[in-house]
Amino acid sequence: MTGTLPLRITLVDDSDLANAGLRTLLAPYADRVAVVDNRDALAAPDSLDVVLYEPMGQTSMSRSLLRDLQSMSAAQAAVFSWAGPDQLPATPANPHLAKSLTASQLVVSVERLVEGRFETAPVSRRVVLAPVAEEPVEEEPTPEIEPETHFEHEDVGLTPRESEIVSLIVSGLSNREIGDRLQLSINSVKTYIRSAYRKMGVERRTQAVLWGLDNGIHVDRGHALVG
Image (cartoon, rainbow, N blue to C red):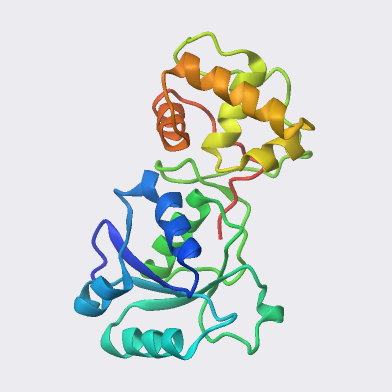
């Protein structure tokens, strides 16, 4: 285990989509974590910090790969699954990370695993202002965003609704989650996003996240909980 930045992690999951999705999800945090291919992990096991694995639907190949990685490296292993601990075939001996975690939550959880201070509860009442260090806050009495919220970002002409949506994008929410949160249709969310992107001068979600972080967009405290 290296313990140096960026932390090197690999995912043992028979789903190519899961592997590609994890790499894309964590791309904005490349200075803190690096997702390495299983073959590269096997070639340099001593450089690994964390091995994530999906225990549901494992094939003999993925089980063998997981055994090899665990025997060849000192990396911390952790379950990474949509299924809860009570839904797994057997009680996991390793820490459990839910695939529903946002990117910032997952990054902090991986860092805590390596530091040896991971809390078994997957959610704590602390906020991650990634990539800045977390700060403790009290729980909000309601998950709704206050309409008078102000944002300290560069004035590019964003409307209050566009600013809300950009804030939720920075927090790691999907378009559907944003729609559910603000009670908007998915098409309305996409319309607001296109308009905001045009004003911000960005084209992709990762660019919008970086723009938001650079311009003081506040992370949504109702969703940025970490484990």
